[in-house]
Image (tube, rainbow, N blue to C red; front, side):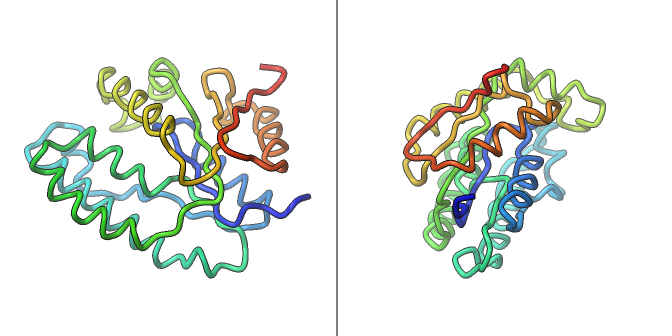
Length: 211
């Protein structure tokens, strides 16, 4: 097996399988996984539209994600590191959730933190459709996320696609989760792990032969 990229980031909208893939890649490449923050006391207020909750939630995520990645010492790690998020995703969601005045405050902190973090060697983009996300969110374990409006899901999908059309900070493997289910189909996950054992250059697309 070839040497794994040192730092791999998995990204995509909610409920597409980022965490499962990050953990599988960490095991596959004998590395360690760093998983996104889930404990945010302002998240319920954000979903319910409470005034000011969006900025509070976003700043909580921004500072927490920065601290997590900075303290991980990714550049100094002796083994591959796989995260189930890309730091830039924080800004993507900020632009979906915050108004212009809040963005101005947020962006000052974001730019300061971003300059201090390394870029991944490889990013895996789990591309989704609003229909795919809605189907995943009907699962009884979705909790608060099950109430996310369809319009927000559509905006999130467009924002992720727009972001990755212009993303040049790392090589990218795009996985179409509308036709590939790495969460529920073990063979799809095995096929993807096999694909990632080969070099990825620029932006490439993955689709299992059996899908």
